[in-house]
Length: 273
DNA sequence: TCCTTATGTACAA
DNA sequence: TGTACCTAAGGAC
Image (cartoon, rainbow, N blue to C red; front, side, top):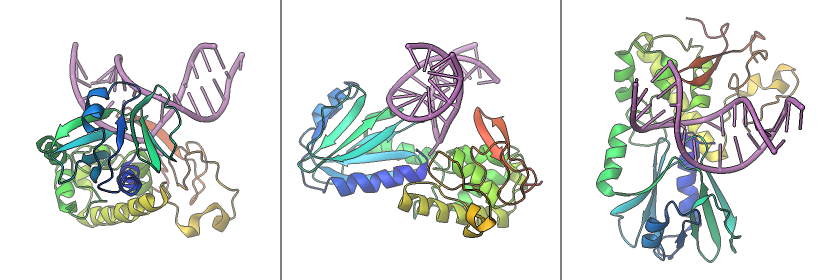
């Protein structure tokens, strides 16, 4: 479930699973990361970091000079388990293991050993991340405010804002009653401030619960006297993957459309221009 | 067993 | 804009 909240949660979970100082077995059963894994084998995990959808694992006994850079893409998955680790399947790109637990990485778009400088370059090409304390929302609004591109596309552009994916994009626009096709430059500073603050809160909750929930208590099916939801992605949402179903608030039909090769979902009644 | 789909991105044309 | 890449689950047969 890789939007930014998943990656920040993984950074926490990797660090919690493998305390600094404990040497790890590092392997790549699939083979695609075998050379790097051999270099890292029997060294401890020192630090983890996350920016948007990018995860960084720093190995060694001191401040890392090299990092494992991981991006899950659309399919990547990480599974944690207790020792003893089962025999790995042939899709495990990276396995970390110690005496008490193991973690398997499968299907990432990126899993590469990079230098500290290369890591900085990744940070430099990413926009502010609502989950990072150093993030500057004004930086994002400066880009959005000059753009004729739709706000729906801008929210997915990691150079503009890092960590938002297709679910948070759809849900935050719904929560603020914003038509996804409005141009970025028509988003007022007040609207942007509210969107940013909401993303900070929603994504922090996402890290805490390891899933995306966006429905306010007063709009849950129970509170609205409607039948329980039938979403299959784990969280409570207003519009994501709810095409042709009734809007939780107005009862109108949720619409869907292609936008930049992704599925956009919105309620045309609640999200007017 | 095959087909579709998915919370993503990079690159070619 | 289209396509390639990575994996697994669910649904249609």
